Amino acid sequence: MTSPALANVSDLVREAARSAGDKAAFLFRDTAMTWAEVEAGLAGVAAGLVALGAVPGDRVAVQLGNTPDFPLVYFGALRAGMVAVPVNTGYTRAELLHCLADSGAAVIVTTRSGAETALSIAAELPGLRSVVVADVDAAPAGATSLDALRANAGHGESTGGGEDLAVVIYTSGTSGRPKGAMLTHRALLANLEQCARIDPPVMSADDVVLLVLPLFHIYGLNAGLGAVAKHAATGVLSERFDPVETLEQIRRHGVTNVVGAPPMYVAWSMLPDVGDAFTSVRLAVSGAAPLPSDVLHRFLDATGHHVFEGYGLTETAPVLTTTLMSEVAKPASIGRAIPGLELKLLDEQGRPVEDGDPGEIWVRGANLFSGYWPDGADGPDADGWFGTGDVAYLDDDGDLHLVDRRRELILVSGFNVYPREVEDVLAEHPDIEEVAVLGIAHPYTGESVKALVVLRPGARLSAEDVISHAALSLARFKCPTAVEFVGELPHSATGKVSKGQLRAASLESA
Image 1 (cartoon, rainbow, N blue to C red):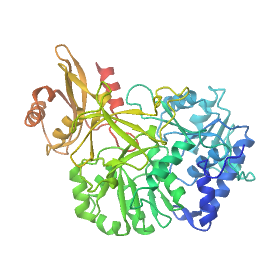
Image 2: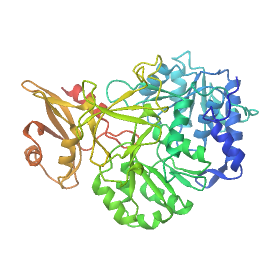
Image 3: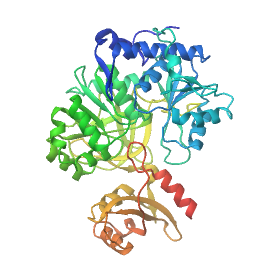
């Protein structure tokens, strides 16, 4: 069944090709691909997937970096009515096996370096029928080359859309194994439309957008790639974040929009030529993790640009709030809800909180997911509301401030301790580079606070020094009772500290 216009996410590309076919869609290294070429390429991929035997509803795993191949495969799978499963390019074999087995993927599109692992997994999973390899002239035995797939005659009309499943994207797994969030075409398109209603506009056809955030992450996938397609803008694809190289890309291509994460701004703010490179930029946004206030101020001083912070979830496709909606973009605030979204703060009994009190963020809107794969478990309730698990409070101006994850609360003798509050205090110490706080079992208080600390180069601190520093600003029950000095902390693809990995390591060592 053919879907109506703009019911399918891939229709965004078809419309961009109609309105701006000769315009550069993606710049990559020294090459450019027009919107007409993207449309032709994704149509070939869609037809090629059908030729492999894939049918509407089949899951197509996309394990590719930020190259032009990613949008062709992603939009091509959607054009053919299939379900894209973006896969982290850094997955170990065990992680990839879980993702492919759990999603029941019929096809995986990967790179030359990932082909051997994918083929070995395919031998274990009868349902994984096809391995497609990009960046090769001739695919290894048992696989198909992406070029051969693209050579198929077009597939111009889209199949499916609306409430049909478009993407199963695996969360970072703050507890247990990652779960696949089910996002429909409706949810992805709704979030793009909600963001398009922000005034002044976040993006237009005249913009050149830096796409360095991983496209396998929902932030890069929809807020980056999806938005570029919706507005027929131009995306500058970058396979990895290198501070010097990306500044050169911004300068060379006249980038106007930066869709970023805190580690990018931290690194850029240290470079002497960041101000010169950002002369073409009109808007810089940050998400995925809190941006430290000192970095925001340092970046503003160096470039004259305020970095607008946003907040969202994989389950919400992803944007929920932004300081672009605030009267004044305040440091440490996540702003206000975007247009078309309802938001409320509830206490643990499900009641609205008093003014100024923290509560769990609940949201309702067309951008919400349909629950977790495969049966839609733990999705929005019967009234369409979804509890995010994040705790925030509203200030007197109506701006939100994120306090912490409800699931990460530490309960010390019946008192709530928010790890974020402890981390913020410890991070103020001049000798501490980075810190993460976890709850650990305690025989008398139930739980107590443990701090994992990364020191700045050359610094020396004792556990007692760290605890004493915390005691200057925090009540006794909030202070760490254990301090572990580590060389580094694990991070997700977008720079967020991976508390799940830290907990797992803590359990293993216990």
